[in-house]
Image (cartoon, rainbow, N blue to C red):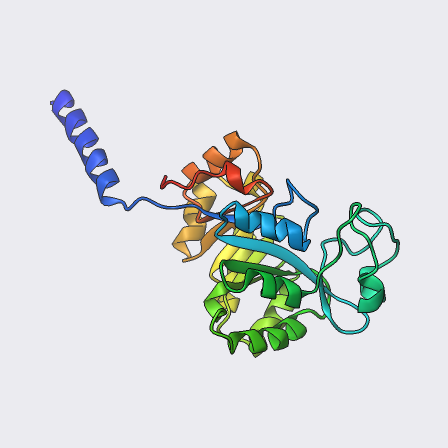
Length: 254
């Protein structure tokens, strides 16, 4: 009887596996293709597109003259030949700054024009006062055939910026970024009607993934670069991996 029960259990497991549709893990290039070229620059984003990503993630600040510029750090010291806060400079000054020997800081408009709706663009609201400006800018692009609201994903660690964005835009998908316990982000995710929780991959395990999925959210995890970590995270059933090395994520169904 025990043998029979074991056989039935195995057969049931196989049947359930066959009934479960295979999942493609979406590949999102982190700040373009950060592992190959200077992050958040147009060549880096072009490289990510060449590598066949499903989406590109970038960061935006509003500069002193009001434009949205694509850069990760609050200060310019680490990545450029300049110093100080990026939000304190006007666009003309920013465009003369050199990033990692030969690259420049683009505007959000330039990134949108480059991608031209070919893949999803994940815009992280990095700086303050970026929510309303991003919403306003996107309205012009949604009038074009190449861009639709489904091709944009707005994310941020600053949940107040996400709330402000949602207050003026009910349609564009939102993802809640978190460095802490992903389960602590579920409440604000529900409040914002977010589509995804974006946690650090090191905070994930099968139990956490299951609880996030039970609440109806997808999981777009960051920043997964090593092959062993990529394989482990894919096995947990996340929907997307944000990575500096898009070519390392297999495109076949898992």
